Each structure stands twice: as C-alpha cells, then as structure tokens.
Image 1 (tube, rainbow over the protein chains, first blue to last red):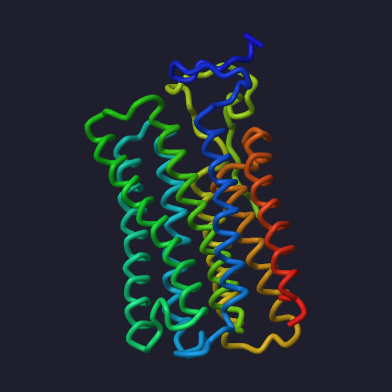
Image 2 (image 1 turned 90 degrees about the vertical axis):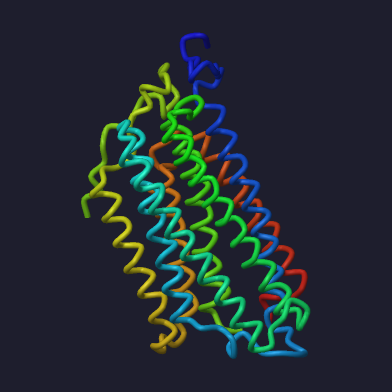
Length: 198
Length: 115
C-alpha cells in the first residue's frame, strides 16, 4: 500500500487518491439529498394555491431562460479556470475565476429581480404553499450560488498574494466542483419548476 | 463529435504518487470544453422551445430526457467524473440515487404520480 500512497502536499492517502477531493464528492453526494428534499416538497405543493397568484401567472420563462443560460456558461468559464490552474497559468486562472463570479452575480441579480417582481405580483413567502416551497427551493439555491461567488472572489484574492495553501490546482478544482454542482441543481430546477406546467 | 481528450494524470486514477505541483490537466482540451458548452446551450434552447411549441405527448419525456442529458454532460465532462477515479463516482452517485429513490418513494406515498 505504501507504493500507492499519494503524497499530496503533505497529506498521505492509503487509497491513493486525494482525501480533499474524496471529501468534496461525499459532500456533493449529501447535497443531492438536501436539494432532493426541497425539489420534491415543491413538486408536492406547487399546485396548492389558496391565495395569491399561480405559477403560470408569475413565471417569466424568457427571463429565467436567459438566467439559466448565464449560469450554464459560468460552468464553461469555471472549467477554463480549472484548466488554467492545472497549467499553472495564474493570470488565466484569476481571469476565468472573476468571469465566473461575474456570471454568477448576474444570475443572483436576476433571481433578486425575479423575487421582487413575484412579491409585487402578490406572491409572498407565506401567501400559499406554492410560494413557500418555491422561495425555499430557489432561495436555497441562490444562497449556494452566493457562497460560490464568495469562494471564487476569496480564491482570486488569495491567489494574487500567492498564499493558496496546498495544491493551487486542486483548490481551484474543488471550488469548481462546488460551482458545477450548483449548476446541475439549476438544470433540474429549471426543468421541473419552470418548464413543466402544474 | 470529437471531444479532444487529453492525457490525464495517473494520479487521477489513483495509481501513482504525485504532488500538487504535478497536478496536471486531465479530462479535455479547451476546444472540447467549448464544444460541450455549445451542446449544452443547444439543448437549453430546445428545452425553452417546448414552452412555445406544442410537442404533444412528447413534451414531458423530451424535457426529462434533455434535463438528464445536460446533468450527466456537466457531471461527466465539466466535473471530470468520467475521467476520474471510480471511487468519486461511487461517492456522488450513491448520494444521487439514494436521493432519487427516497424522494420518488416519498412522492409516491402522497399519490403524486397518480395526479
């Protein structure tokens, strides 16, 4: 086993793979259960509208489609950042990380606009079961995107000072995995919540 | 379509020692990633078109298939799961399929699929 042990920036692993990466995948697997619960709760309650507007009355599909496209393209810029980090291209890494953060911020801005528009149309958090489950699901996702943006910008700041602990390429890759996960959750939300009518 | 795969490190398969400085690129080339992004964009456009065009009985299955294809394309290529150690796949898919199983059963108990 000693032959296959990996010396990964001081961390040894008897499995021969990075413990950090294994931990991240385990975390993402557990996140599936969190979002699975939120999505199925929404699916159950989306038709429960005793007060306030129905999903069809508030959803703006063209606007959400553009937001979805922006988030999808942020996955491309994130993978380009990971690729640049693997090539030890610090300038390219920082550039693509900032572009990814900007695209993420555009998505979150769109979500804030959408929530404001829905609220003005009479859909509050406690208006109906549809409203509660919708805001909880998409709000949780928005918080995940916001956390991702903070991580991206923090990484850029640390990278500029050359103070990234451990393997820089692996650190960028871990944040990349989190960011892509947020994207795949939105792929499901966009279809199940917005495109499939009640 | 050519995916332009590149050499990936032996370390990503867990069969060799490596340090952070040797953490080389694995998976695909830049052109390959752009190709994947273009395919994802095209599928998204198709998804959105179902809102405007009547696909009849194909509407729901088509949307679900496109969603699953997009999901696995991002996981396989952008998250490199296709090229990485199988243990990572086990970790992620265990959580994913457990979630799908648990919540499909939960929705079933509420007669969600009979509506």
